Image 1: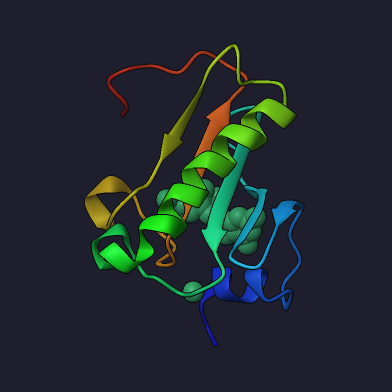
Image 2: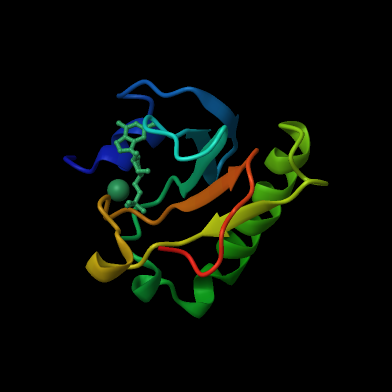
Length: 113
Ligand code: 5GP
Ligand code: ZN
């Protein structure tokens, strides 16, 4: 298994976990772009959002609802936060295992860079 996030999800590589359950793990980004920067990843390998199917609706819903719980737990829910799936190269995806970014703790700009 040479996928970085598969290895973190299985516990083979360490990460600062903020949540784990049967389907998801969430951990702090190693190179945070905001005071709070958490990644939520499914345990099952899915490369990009383009590979998500209708069978995954519950999984993706769980990722988004988990983002809101983590934002609340980390104290940024009321101020505001951003959730991002980068899909493929032009969006800046560098790890090809589906992940949801949760960013907050500073003002977020729009449009994004
Ligand atoms: P992407 O650019 O693919 O949307 O996001 C990948 C994210 O994974 C980046 O924000 C990057 O900092 C983070 N990342 C890369 N390698 C590691 C790692 O080994 N551990 C953790 N916790 N985050 C990582
Ligand atoms: Zn993977």
